[in-house]
Image (cartoon, rainbow, N blue to C red; front, top):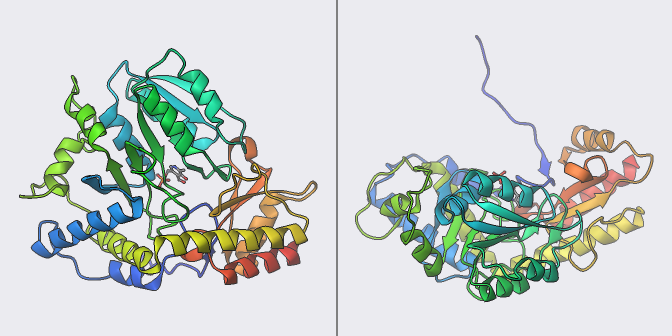
Length: 369
Ligand SMILES: Cc1ncc(COP(=O)(O)O)c(C=O)c1O
């Protein structure tokens, strides 16, 4: 075989993730390796943990990146908090709520699904009904549903979960770094995220955080965590304070990249970053409406970082995406599940969320429609 080194084409990533990565994050990934127990690496791990606490707005000691993508963080939370037979209430209004159900069931949970239409939020009243005469171990909701572009009302749902004596788990894969996520103020017990969306780092790590209440639940388990790789008690020996013990070989360069991307998030400022995402969403929405294109998700609850845009009748949606990619190098996403063929998903996440990118995608769409 005579293969050449792979050189990717130039793209502007405006899909549902991954987003574009700043040059300094890419540069961080190409630095020489050190060992995963090297004192310099251990110091950097501490900085990652402390920056993650700032980004999650939490004091939780147990805050670190799980090796693996966002779905690994999802499995980590359910595998550690659920024992076979535990009852769990999960809000389902898109693909990632459904994935939570699948993962929880594989952990042996008895799942009660609270369903809402795709494109609509989970109404706290529905969750309240489901919690009537019930005290599940866990209530779980996706904060930013990437498949529909909806922001679920976490604060209200979290209060209901605590009133029922349950832990509150949220998916912040798409929300973290792109809109407010306030772990401590909202009383969240467990959360996971992903690196490749609004943190603008390549995919490969899943930042997680567990409250002391969640840790107490783990400590009082009767059965062993079914996943060795994701067992928080074992991972704590490597990511915790004090003597570091080998568990698995940390993905060294991914951690370099996360360190740099978190540094950039904090350098910009959380509030400033949220404002930028909001402003670019508003600009996109205005540009779209001038092209007679509208957002499919519920008004007042639309994500800033992911816009589900209704495909106009008679338009070949796949052809438009193909042309955007080949003619302008712009990637946007297709719809999933009931939204397949009906929406385009235009992401403005992290480094990709810029006025320039909004202008580029609007002008490219104008040329095509
Ligand atoms: C809300 C949400 N949760 C979970 C995931 C799964 O993350 P990953 O694909 O990184 O495993 C995604 C990925 O798009 C997501 O958008």
